[in-house]
Image (tube, rainbow, N blue to C red; front, side):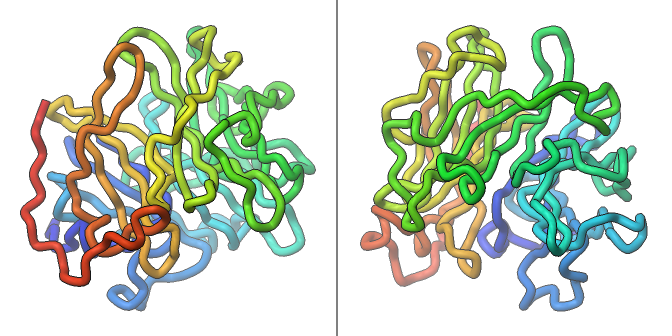
Length: 328
């Protein structure tokens, strides 16, 4: 496979990186990539994947899910796809919507990170009557699967991070939803212009000391930002203690963590929060004294496109500096 799509060229929302231990390749997923470069991509109603060996050079998009080929119920709002490995299967989790319905989340499954993915069941797992997005997978200390997701601020005003227990095949909810926290719990959040508090992009990470943190995103007075909360019980039900300041706040967020094959902890997010200009930013991270810190942003994608509090400091010229990873 050819890897000619440079990370500085990719337009992507909500990047999620799967570091696949089987193929030793990296994968990221979206409903569409760079429509000027790939005008023949079918949109909406599909998912595509990019593959990489080094996080810098990526393949052309490969279609991994087509709703027309599976008689799927939804064609709209294919937002924030994530790919997890569960019971030796690849599971693609995303939101979906049909005209006249609420947005909902469910799981697609495949034997390969490049699909084809098929629905586990014909209906969503998020609660009926809830407007939801940004589902992610979490296994509790007993090994039981949960979907953690956002209950939309559009429906409830103060956006929620909630969780619902799943069947072993991830196809059905097997219990009632639990609200873990609300956007207004974070001291660093700001009031969104429409008069509500947003929750976006939950992602759970077990720290080296055994503690459990959850990255999530919202809007501040300076733009889109991500921060994290820490569970006092070290498991899903918390209570969740919000960190006093955001982790990244230059109009970029929807973050997640992964390890490179060399063992470096990384964070991915998009910046700025403007669809035509969104780029993937990759950060080297460290854990210290039970907390999470940014070490360095390595892609340089903030160079000419950062927003929020950094908007006045971007450069007019293109970044040409070589991307460098420090390893472990």
